[in-house]
Amino acid sequence: RWRWHGRRPQSHAAGVQAVILINPYAHGGGAPPPSTTHRYWQFIDLLVTDAGFFEVAEIQLLTGSTVISEGKTYSSFSAPTLALGNLFDGSTATRCYWTKTQIETSGFYIRIDLGTAMDVDGVKQAGFDDSARYMNGFTLQYSDDGTAWTTYATKTGLTYPGNNTLSSTYSVP
Image (cartoon, rainbow, N blue to C red; front, side, top):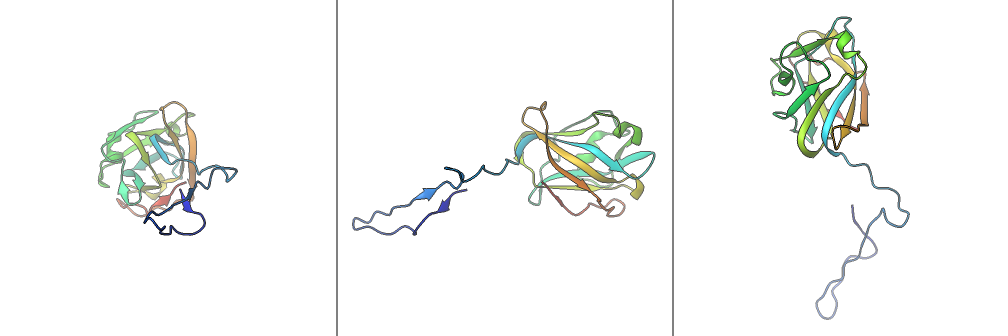
């Protein structure tokens, strides 16, 4: 986040080069962009078309094209049918699901503890076998302590990619 100010370094008589770096956020240059590096991430306010269930085969948090959520610690507000770890196992052939009533309950979340603060700039998901049970919207939040949460991104109008198929990357924020 540093930039050159003025001319590039020039050689001096003694063979020494001078470099001047200016912090663009200092002295009224505005606040730096918010950090995307946090340990805890959660999905809330899930939108699903089906009147009965929310069913998902995979959810991935990404840094660039690298999946960083696989093999981490997960929790949810209420226990799903089938194992919660199926969401983050790298396989679109496994799944878990909740009733729509469960996900519409105030306070519902699907939470990921990455173990250490990591940058998140993308999300992917995979439906299992029914487009009506697919998450077509969500809010992603982060926390540094697992208690105080800040909204990072809200996505709506997500399109079902097909059975057992990962979506394209949803850029966040």
